[in-house]
Image (cartoon, rainbow, N blue to C red; front, top):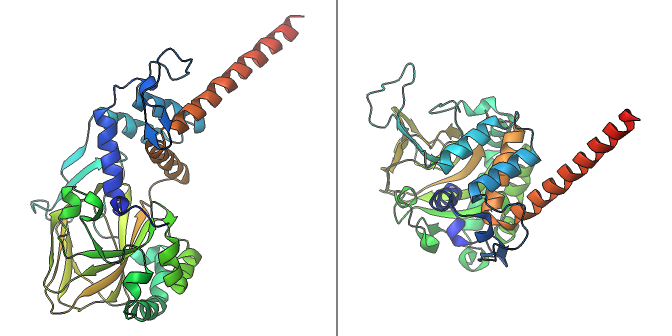
Length: 346
């Protein structure tokens, strides 16, 4: 079926889960067993390799079991900081910028420490972005054809829903305003089969270029509307736009102290953990293809580790399985070690 409307904003979903963990960080392991997707209380007398560990400690232990800690030291460190309630909120100072601008501020409740901050990237340095821009006409023509069909709303899934859909109350999402609308193709790395079927050429292109996406959707910014200053609250995702239907020269985006105008057929790539705002001053709507992508300074192993954390937040029972396997493996390793020692002593 369709994707859950409350998860439409990927970073909002992540932030809500992180805040949940911070609020419950001291909860012991026996309080976290999940059944049928719901967390329930079970007896603390049941044998459990996680007994006595908080949820954050369980995640920490599972990360060290599944990955080489040296390869994910930034993820481990950041997870521990977030579990302690730490956030990244404060002014930023970048060479060559007006650091007195009130927009020169990063706000990230969900973060990986020591990721470089670049307000606007040169998108064409990335092969996937260059290829997407080169075939922008394909995306535009399919977009116009599909959205021009009056039956789209009945054929599609969550077509042009607003930022508050599904009960999302996060102020970062609500900063977009009630008129800002989206039509999702991918959420949390999962393709929406209904909407994918409506845009086969665009989806084929996105798959071919190999963009490191976690979320893809078409975004509508109505004529005369504004997006108020805010942060998306997450520094390990960047946001990319491909301009499709843009009233050029009348529709702008400001990130930090830099202001850029959207252009038809052109890519933009920017850091939305920094305070940003936008305005469509035109009398016509603006449409872009919007992608949330992994920060390019993350390693593939770090990306895998972050995904594991959020899989555990979605399905806490994964921790039980992973750490039971870890305990079993350690037991086997200890037995093998004793056997080797016994052989050497003969």
